[in-house]
Image (cartoon, rainbow, N blue to C red; front, side):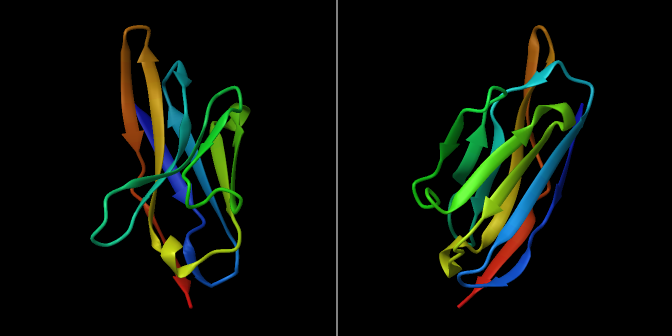
Length: 120
């Protein structure tokens, strides 16, 4: 079982910045590419960014150059620094952690989501 605690969402004006954090706790062997997805009203959930346990990052096209994802393996925590925010970034942001629970069992965990609202 993996428990994800998200923090850092809120309301910000266009051009501003926010930082999201997601901490994983529980019993597991490892977490592979941990990161964030988002879902705006009426749209499908989309990739924001993921980071592997060795630091390789993958960003959605709409956030490249503006968002930076980092990871602290010792704390099982990822940090999403969001700069130059746009109203189009408004969405519920979900933390994702694909975890290996045992040698033969893996499971994809999701956080409850945190709202990010960017006003124009």
